[in-house]
Image (cartoon, rainbow, N blue to C red; front, side, top):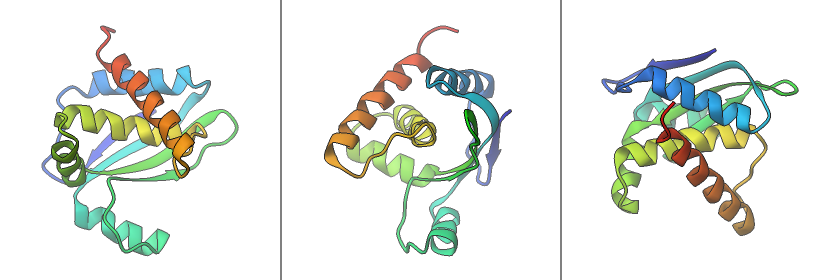
Length: 139
């Protein structure tokens, strides 16, 4: 089950389209869907989680708590829409494009993709672009 939760005024415009897209990402990576929760929040909400659970005192756009077992993907994925908006401006892309990148990024981490080393970052970016394109295909 894919659920969307909103801790701010932000809302997805068409939750069913996003749900179908996330489902496609999961299945194209060879997983089935368990419980996937996207929690959209602001910087202060995500900073508190980052400090409390990861002991990091920095702003971030996404934190993913992985509960995947075998090939059944489950997680809580927290996304700061404030950070997404700032990143969209910095990268000169639309808010929607950056949101799709971040949403797919969380799923790709759950599927085993890394992004600490340069070669892994390149692979992650290519996969994100592939998944973003899937969103724009009529379903």
